[in-house]
Each structure stands twice: as C-alpha cells, then as structure tokens.
Length: 389
Image: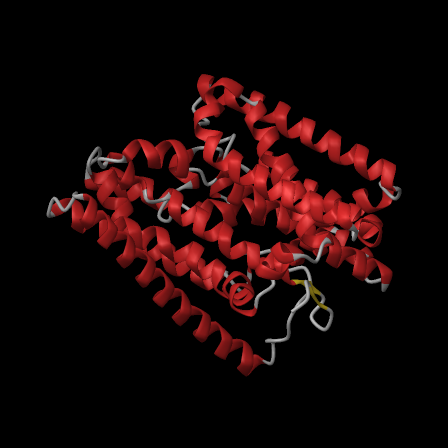
C-alpha cells in the first residue's frame, strides 16, 4: 500500500501515526506505575505525553490547511473566513465527536463530585461542579487557563475544548497564512518565527503559572496551542511547495533521522527537561514537525508501516474514541484496585490489561454506533484533512 489514498484525498501514514500517538497518551496516564518498584523507569523514561499531544495539534493545522487550499483552488473559501462562517466551521469540526464528548462528561460526574466532596460540603460541591459543567458543555473550559476547569469531569477533554476555541479563528488564520506566505522562503521564515513564538510563549506562561492562579496556561490553553496549529498550517504550505522535490533519498534520510531523534528525545526528555526550561518545548515541536513533514513527503519502510490497513483504521477511525474513553476507565478501575490494595507489580499489569481491553471494547462499540448513524444519514463519505482525534 502506498502512502496516499488519492480517492479519499488522504496521507495514510499520518492517520497511522495517530494510533501510536494515542498509545503514548494512554501510556502517560498509567501514573500508578510511578509508585511501583520500578517507578523510576516509568517516570523518567515513559511518562511523557507531550510529543503525542503536539502531534495532534500540528496534524489538525496541517489537515485544515490542506483542505483550505483545496477549497481556495475551487474558489469556495471566502465565506469560511467570515464570522458566521468561522462559527459554522468550528461547529462542523466538533459535531461528530460531541455526543461522545458529552457522554464521558456525564460518566465523569460521580468521580468529579467525589473528589470535590473531600474538601467541600455538598452545596459547594454542586455549585463548583455546576459551573465547571456549564463551561464544559460549551467546550470553553480550557480557555480559562485554570486546571480545575480545563480538566474537569474527563481530563483529556481539555484537548477538544482547546481545539474548538482554535477552530473558531482557524479560517481567518488560514486565509492570512495563505495570503502572505506564498513562496518557499517566506514559508520557511514563517516556520522559524512560529517555533520562536512557541518557545517565548512557553517561558511567559510558565511565569504566569507560578505567579497567578492560572495554573494551566502553558499546557492546555488555546492561547498557546493555537501556535501549534498554525505551525501545522505552515508545514502544510511547505508540503504543497516541496513534496515533489523532497521525494528523494534526502527525504528518506530526513524521515529516518527524525524518527531516531524523536525516540531518543522521548526517552531522555524527562531527565533533561528541568535544565532546559522553556527550550524543551522548542525541541518538542521541532522534532514533531519534522517527523510529520517527513511522513507526508516520503514513501519508505517507515511510511509503509504507518500506511498499513490495520494501523490506518485504528488511527483514523478508533483513535478519537480511545482518547475520550480510556482516562475515565483508568480512573474508575484504579479506584477499585486502590480500595482493595492491589498494588503489586503483577496486579498493575492486570490493571493495564483491563484498561486497554475495556478502552478498545468501548471505543469499538462507539465507532460502530457512529458508523451506523453516518450510514443512515448518508454521511459516511471519506473527508480530506481530518483533524479531530
């Protein structure tokens, strides 16, 4: 199988990589391993969701920009950048995942309230939870920059909240980038400037978190993550301008080198990060961006692996359901294991097997339900530039 599906307008390896990114995120949520006999190995080498999260934001920008260029070529993009068009754009991009998003918010209510009741009475708990739930319904919780709100009910939901806020301004961002960055030289300068902005913003938001109640500006807020999406847009522009040129031995070298460096950095990041401060975010995003670009432009043993039918289906169809379901399954199961003091290493492995099995089972069921709904509505045609999880 090649690296592209021309009939669907998709780069298959990018979907395949989504599944690996989801597995990395799921691995990073198994924090109970950090308390075991081999906790040092987990906390220092395996507990690192940042590259996977970065990949999804970059991929969202990349996919949106390719779709925008296609619409612009067909002269159908002008209305999208209007205010009403931007709102419709945002709603359209979250419409499919929104029922699942709400479902897991509801499932998370008992766990959330139990956590708050440890510190407040019932009335305060209801008031706090009510405020958090209202923000979450409208997918605005991550815009607060406060972890209590952004991670309420279902921790990973912050990603969809942040992405939704970014969707609302993405049409205008795409129009500006497409208008002012039309040459390869300008695109490269835009890429460099974007990375510098991410590093500077990271340093600023780290200070904000230390000195103010806004303790989640640097990781979850759309005010930083928007620059990851714009970086993905620049990468899409670079891809359009260079993908025919780079499909040579140099592209393969870039692909192999970026994967080798990304794996090495993943294992070393937690050890090196404290000394690198804000610069760590620049390294994260550069490696992730180069890897995404190399996956898109090359056709070699790496991209063919990520273009396999099974991994493409897992990444393209199941990933968003795994993302939404796994965390609460992990949290509720862990409560049971903690209650019965099942904390030996073999029991931790049992817990992992249960978390993975239930997550895949639930996600497959949700996918089947959505697929039937789409089939009934006649909306199961493949779309180019998929950006959601």
